[in-house]
Image (cartoon, rainbow, N blue to C red; front, side, top):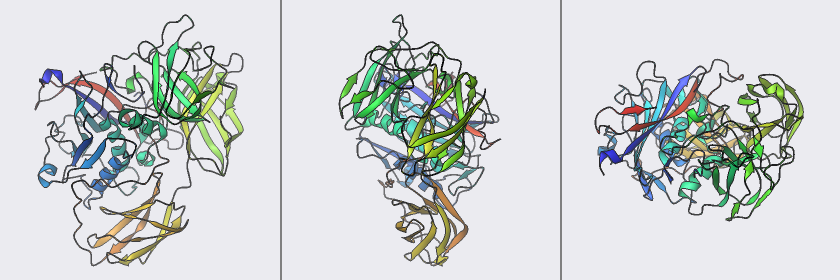
Length: 565
């Protein structure tokens, strides 16, 4: 294919203390009307052998494999497999189409990580604009930064960042669901974006699903019938934002990958934490309009945010809705939250929503019946909440509505809170020193079935004996002192900082050429809390990762690329 018919798309990750930062999916990138996706059913990735500077035990490469495996699904026809051939792993020519590298750039060879750039990672995706077929994709991480696989504070978590970048590798753009893995903002040191949310899974299903699930389709328009382009349309069930989509330039939307059930549907403008600046729009020629207010669908065009009209969606069916007619623009804007994680059975007193002009709202409404609003205090730039979480509350994201009583103007904190099980902890390993092949007892708390233990480059399944006790067989690792990390299926993890001694170890076995370890099913985790906000109140001064999309023409195969903002 001539080079002029190739386009290279970059999804760039950067840090900042504060500041800016028909489409079926808000985070499904397109080339015209064609979604970006791999045409092959098997895509092999290569982890460059030098790995992350400062990590010498191979755990960085295990973290990369685990990031890829988070996207594995028996419901998708695309298979991701690691190529461990030594010749391939020695390569650094990420610009070549015949290798899909994950590599750390320590010299700024890529040109992304110069002084003052703020970039942490980049995912170049080269595709055919005539078909949307991905021809090459690579994940490049800044090798001059500090990385960790053992939950060290102040460092970037390899597994978390790679999990997000693999979403781009597959063809997904950013998500405007606040806590989704593909949301364009995460903080340093945090690991909860290691696992996927329903919006992330629905995006992958829409691209690669053997069965696309149920579909909601329709259009968004003004009262005079003119279409709204770039409205963020959300399918919500019992307060859970299951999936979302953008309306196209003709106002049409189509949300795929939904399970059957009863939903409410609303359209909201992207003028809060996520804006047009955080999406790659050039190849699709998409326009993002924001001159309207959040509006819930109803058979006559709209319905009250207090009691929206339900939509019954049979499993595997497509439901076409009457046009959604938007309300006038409202002044309220939501930009983020503090204490976004809620624990079943707890009275959460530190939950908050941040934004602008929030004092226009009079009522806080939480859909569903497993979160009870005990009290709220609405200010200009924040809303403080006391929430009682049911002991039986299902894990996953929750949305909150702020409503102005006089005219029912509304703004939704879409997926801004997450109900999560209690995080695991590790207090002791018995014995504290052992040889490979020994059975080790792990003492801690909140251990879940499907948990696994990371020790250097090796991973072992944890057999759960009780919520505070499990055991695993010590894998073959070299002699030495190790930091042991236990991770629950929802991506929450803890480490034993005292260390664990291995004696009588041997060489670490190389993974086989198709070795992409299968992750346990994920039910939690997620992306960050918003790009256009200052650091959240629960961690003042923390650095944020802001992920911005740029379209770049492939001007020279081995030379520098030309950026077109």
